[in-house]
Amino acid sequence: MYKSIMIPVDLSHAEKSQTALAVAADLAAHYNAPVTYVATTANTPGAVARTPEEFADKLATFAKEQGELHGHRTAAHSIVSHDPTSDLDKKLAGAVSDIGADLIVMATHIPNMADMLLPSHGGALSRHTDASIFLVRHSA
Image (cartoon, rainbow, N blue to C red):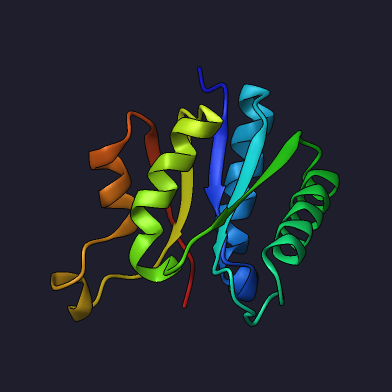
């Protein structure tokens, strides 16, 4: 049914995505589909890497480690943005198209008051892509 799975990851907080990573791996095994790990970075030094190239290498290493841990095919797709926070939804939607993903697995949080003012990334992707979205809540 699904042929290509995309999972956005925040390399600086990967520990908060363990449940979503496990769900993506399970779905990849079930559908024999590759998982593409997608992350955004600025073109300036950040907490994860000093350059976009170093960031891309770290994301590729992360994807490879996930594939070895869970036994599925992986790829990495690094996105460079001038403002990763404000561009995130648009950049992720573009990645869905670039990758050809038909399923997006995303970590999410328990809703709070801020969600009334700020739209969710999963909601934005559901409005701007044709992919199915699987939102996975992590425990607090």
